[in-house]
Image (cartoon, rainbow, N blue to C red; front, side, top):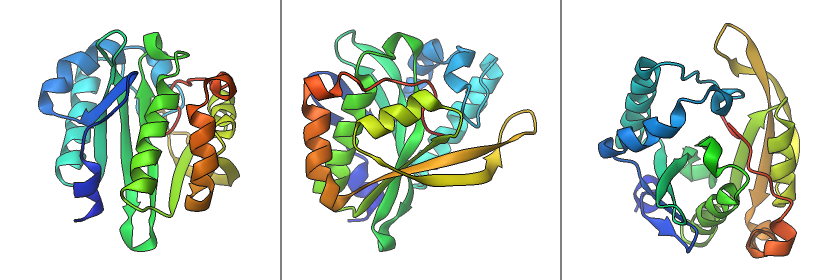
Amino acid sequence: MSWPDMAATTLENEYVRLRPIARDDHASLHAIAMDPEIWRYTVYRIETDADFDAFFEGVLCEHLAGRRVVFHITDKRSGRAAGSRSFCNLAEAEGRLEIGKAWLGRDFQGRGVNRWVDYLLMEHAFERMEVERVEFKTHVLNQQARRALRNIGATEEGILRSYDPMPGGSRRDVVFFSVLRAEWPSVKQQLACGSKASAYLDAPGRTH
């Protein structure tokens, strides 16, 4: 079974549910996406209904084509849609993938949602898909996201300058982080431990 097939499954614990995105998710995600602060550090700008429509169609097309596996996130404590995250840049032959294309509604930031989403995605990647390396990246200016990734045990590897274009014509520098298979047991423990994870800050537009 290929990685996209293995990845496209429902993952959940008592806090969050992740399931493959569907066309019916348009309304629930639109309701929390019209906040410009969410997109501050991303390569997207969602300011109008038309912006979101185009964004959602692009996401859904990439998911259906198998270019990435896009998850709809539900906060189980409220029963509401919280945002989205993806397995992307799947390099199965090299044993690596990225967890990215991430965004979270403002109401769900700072509540540990990011922590549990990362936990479930990395658990699935390392323990079921047998990935060797999981990557993350974020805007060099997003200090909150950089702290968050360090706090879960990801290693900051370096900055790639002028990596990709931003809305408005500028380009951003991005910072890469990674977790390796050998590091996953300690990272898993750190993510699962409430006291250690209290420093983990949910960040808007954390990756991509």
